[in-house]
Length: 152
View 1 (cartoon, one colour):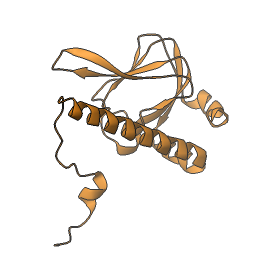
View 2: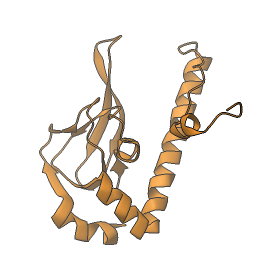
View 3: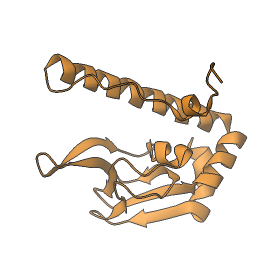
View 4: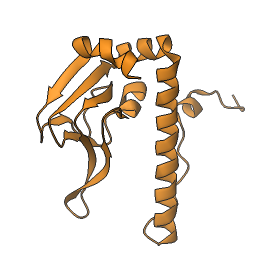
């Protein structure tokens, strides 16, 4: 993967000091990020307890921002450098083009999305079993909303 990212660093590289925010929860800044050096913390603000909670740390070689990048939706979390960090930040159009040209990178994005869906499902299931969450109602995906109904 670093063979793919190395030539992109000069064009799409960004550098952050420890404590700097790459993007904030709720911002629309669709891009795909890869950590080249340093560490990034992904966190959310929980209003019920008035605190920020860390979801995960992303180290060298890690990827984040993929959901906002490929759906165009606002970021669901805040990304903060926890140490001096270099990232490759691919704006949406570039991410689409580069993943089309590099199937290995596209597979990596798909695997990461799958891993995060599995992890989220496990967390929700544990919370429901502990009595801390209710079963959510059905949520239509973007593709479900676009399909014509059978009655039409």
